[in-house]
Image (cartoon, rainbow, N blue to C red; front, side, top):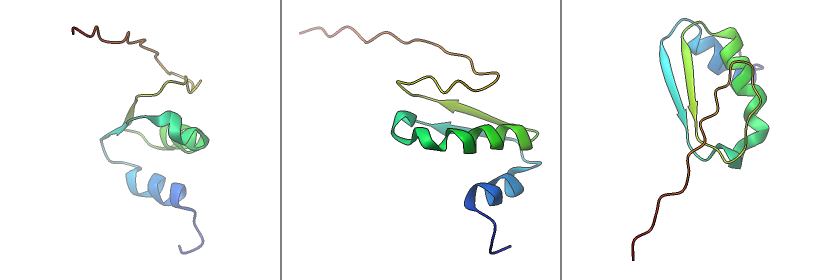
Length: 73
């Protein structure tokens, strides 16, 4: 078990758990996109909510564009 990578350990741990994983400002961690894709592929009940300025381009991804808030001075 010590030779498994962290993302493999996470998939193993979450395999049958129902979890909502919230990742904020994910543009700071875009290289981890493949780990998120693997997590979604190999777990049954994990859902991921990501905020990012970049689209991840993952299968099943839904993009919701949020416009900036108006600033009242």
